[in-house]
Length: 285
Ligand SMILES: [Zn+2]
Ligand SMILES: [Zn+2]
Image (tube, rainbow, N blue to C red; front, top):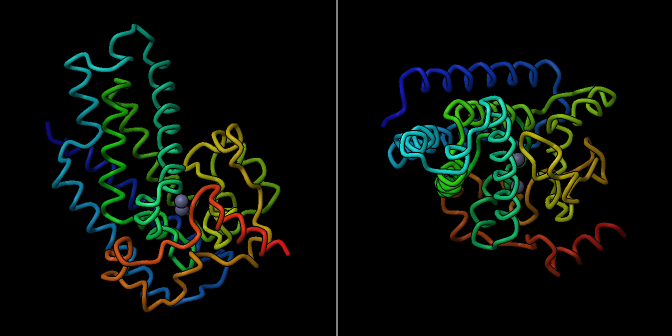
């Protein structure tokens, strides 16, 4: 089964709508000034969106939604074999898929080969709506494989998978926004959704801050599993965004980003490794 026109249309209009809304918000009320050429960053990040969209269409024409449809028809997966009411399987599926995406993100920080791919997302020298769409094509392919496996095992309703994917796309652009949200409102918002101030901590050059706030939609997994960090030590305006070993914009062009996982220095990346701990210690002093 290939993705239907209405599904493609739903995704595209959501992507376009949220993107334009966030870009406008960033233009009207930016939080941080740009540290590098915005034209260059935006053209690189949006070119990656184009490449990733093409790669996904070619490799996974039916995507996770198609696999959910197939699973429903073949009776694959847990939820296709238990008679739960629709609202309950819908809610359970969205929660489960969000947890899988959280775990996968932790894995991308913990396994050296995966971190090499994920460095492309973190090496952005600024943090804005386009950062939320900037991923190495191989990371996108791996994510799709993980999501497909989760869908086959779980057997979620097709609507839940479509809803989740559209939601993830929208929240990823929202929580990478370079936007000012009053702290009082941010505190309430981050009880139910990952806010830009919460996810920005994850883009800090300080390893212990990079290795926190892995959630994309729901902020609860970080709080439950001890990876939550409220604010960067240097503050939202004083913190440095990016990866310590990639500070030169010349090294972050489209071609060099595509090659980065294979040639770039891995740095003190990993969740809990000794090098990351010593960097944390230095920055404390
Ligand atoms: Zn990350
Ligand atoms: Zn991010």
